[in-house]
Structure formats: structure tokens, C-alpha cells
Amino acid sequence: EDFDLWQMTEARLFWQAGMRPTDRYVHGLNFALYVGGPDAIGAQNLGATAIWVGAVPSDRLLFVLKQYQPTVIWTSPSYAWQLGEKAKAKGYDPKTDFAIHTIIVAGEPGGSISSTREAIEELWGAKVVDFFGLSDIYGACAAMCEAKDGLHIVEDQILVETVDPVTGEVLEPGSQGELVYTTLCKKARPMIRFRTGDIGYVSND
Image: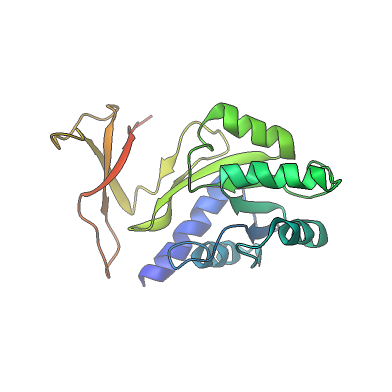
């Protein structure tokens, strides 16, 4: 039941990021137990075509991008940049030789840093959407929407608080502090006030 909920969550966040049933999705990171498989299945549940690739050499991934023309790819910010530069070195124009219109990034900072995001967007001629997740909860717990004005948490499944990272004192909404998550729907391994170690703030706007 938790796994089904996970896949549904991925599908919802994909839709929020702009993926539609007509899209072709390729997962450009590894297929670990906490991410990868559920993401590809989530894309399929949305109605999109999932191309199961995973962590392969860049030449192989570029072949897939050229041969099958996926429209959405999930990777890390640094690898999105590296792959684009590799494509150029092989004589491709990332903007015109491939069909990518959305690059979902996660796993490291970058997608929410405007200068990094815009550099990748310029390289590929595609929009970059940041996703955030934890292996302790879901591979993706929050994502940007097309407005790119922050990450939207899955509020019906996760309660988010901010606390002082030293004292643990609960902070007012809008205050920067350590993010603390409580899962609301997971049955097999619920997390209650899980301290992430990540610093951020919650806005109700």
C-alpha cells in the first residue's frame, strides 16, 4: 500500500512539473530501491511512456536521447550540465537534436539556485524543475511547479515543521531552521518528527 502511494505521489509531482500523458520519460540516474523504479512507474501511472535506462555511460544515454527522443529526463544538476557538454563535444546541439523540454533535477543543490538552473536551461533549451526527497520518506517529497517559485510539499502526506537546529525549539512559519517531517499516510514505516538536517523555511503563501 505504501509503494502504491509512493508511485501516486511521483505521478502527482510529475504532473505539477508539467509532464503529461503524451510525454516520454527517461530516468537518467540509478534505479535504487528508494528512487528510480518508483519514479518510472509513477510516470507510467500518469500515462507517459517510461524508457528504463538508469545509470549508463553518457554515450549510451545520448544514443537513447537521439534514438527515442524522450521529452522529460530526471538527473542531477551537475550531470545535466555534463551531459549537455558531452553532447556538444560529439557534435550534437542539445537544443535541436533532442526533444527534451523538461529536465527534472534532484540529489544535489542546483535546481533551486537560479544561476545554475538558468545555465542548464540555456544549454538544453529546456526548463529545469527541482525535486526534493529523502530515502527515509519518499524519493520525491516536494517539487517546483512551472512558476519556479519554490518547492511545493505533498501536504496531504507530509507535515513539515522548522525547528532551531541546536535547541529543537519549534519555529514560527516563515522562519529558517531545520526541516522536520512527519508522514501522515505511511503504514509500514511511519516517520514522526523526523529531523532531516536540512535547513530551509516553510511559506504558506
